[in-house]
Image (cartoon, rainbow, N blue to C red; front, side):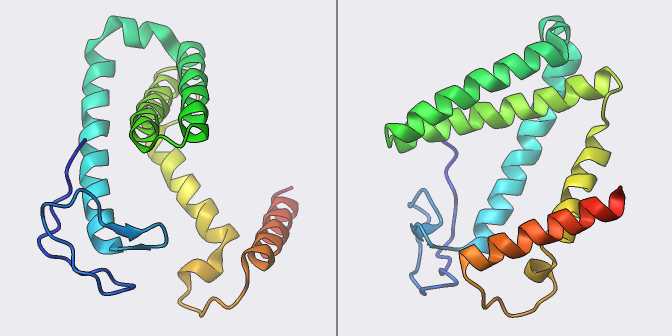
Length: 166
């Protein structure tokens, strides 16, 4: 497990002080230090992405699996993640979630190699889609709706954007 060095960071929601010996910026399921979590996650993701690019470029076996093999591997890891989650085993969930990230990135690299999709454009498209479908999250407006109201709003926006695209 990669340890998070929080250097006595303070939770932005409840004010709890975290010390560098703790392993997570979360003080509860709904309360965490977003800035620290985001920084560590991005650093770790960049390292994983870089390592997997190296693996993909240097491993004939990984490249030969192609999109089909990457999809099979991803499905297997998703099944294992479901089992770990059902067992309420956080350590196993963390391990399997890491495997899902690994396999998603490998799938993206395989798609790029087979000229099906380019990773930078895919990520930019996913980000744009999120911003288009949930503009209220990013426009600075106050969020006053419930989860159910947000789901309805999201589905309406998704349908409208799909209609505009057609």
